Length: 497
Ligand code: NAD
Picture (cartoon, rainbow, N blue to C red):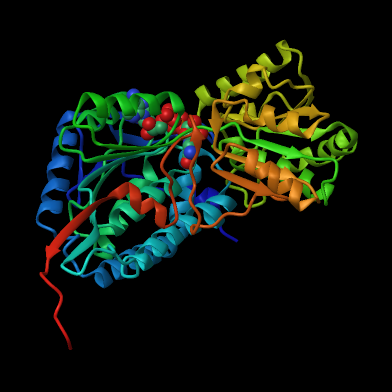
């Protein structure tokens, strides 16, 4: 068995920026510590205008001379697949970086984050030489080719909750389409993307094609957003910052803007749920996974009154399974929140829930406070109303809110009564009814009788203020390509023959 504590003690992290295939020290840096125990991990480049210029120029040059887009698709495919293989070859190292940097349990960093990120790179690598363009149905005397071309220099700004995975969701389709990319990781989790950039070079991605600029959102993030030579900005993060991202485009060059934003997903369990045990396990498992720091966490749990007591009794039996523990222990399922600020914010929401009259049935407090890290117990509220703060705002922590309903149509109305529309679920043994509810739910993804199914082949994104555009699947190419129509005049058709 791996001694993760020994590995963590020996871990060497390089926080310098990655520009044009090289590590570059920025003029300023900031301290980065681990949410697990507060230990200092190192200094990270605080990128600013100078690094932005270097990276944009490198990316533009790489795009213009076609050192990447001009390679045969089969060659780009091989390189992206090698990139995926290298990630798997460095699985332990990457998983440890992720756990130390943002606090998630090491078992999931390995089994979910590294594996899914590598799978994403492999999948888009495979797609590189398998996606065809179109020919329009035009009259005989002309030919119209509809081709996809890379949009150019793509800036991608990502959050800290799945640093490696969100990086791969952006860079894999953008690179597969032939773009140059500048990735800005969150200041709270910069290290895995920087290491990925080194592996990309080792795999054969030419210098300048993938650059990584760590730093603060209001500094390097804003500079990239306003830059006149960035063609596309792909953002994942909060709805509040997402709105600023659109304004950057409006104030600069109308760069293409794509946003994957927050969520407050509804999970509706009807009295005719076919498997109550499964519904309870799923409600808790999906909510507490990643310490509740998931955009699609099913944080609003609607349960029909006639099964509510049975549901709740079983849920309270299961909550202790999600006990917070040492993230470097392979048995741990709940780790640390990303930092002290996030912990205070989550505890503040728990206080707001109590103050508004919701009943705290489990958790509610800080955990492992002697560790030096930032932990919150898995928390369950009953008696929540959809107009309470804890039901309206994204908490982004392990807090589940149970709302009881009597009428299914009213539950659907309440589920839709949210500024978000990322994901939802319905549990019913009546498939026609479940499907009608699924149709009525205003969300980018709706699950029926489960919450966990996921695959790189399906699009991911939201309705309403959960964003625009979709990550994953072939639809992600829409974000990173321009459609070009080329009309060829080919004259009259041959006669006879
Ligand atoms: P955040 O919006 O605070 O930050 C996201 C990124 O934007 C970070 O890299 C940050 O440095 C940068 N940023 C911050 N202010 C900026 C500014 N003024 N200009 C440019 N960039 C700026 O979000 P977060 O706290 O890192 O992440 C949590 C949020 O991300 C949650 O709302 C969650 O729902 C959302 N999220 C959504 C998805 C999805 O696919 N829909 C996936 C993961 C996370």
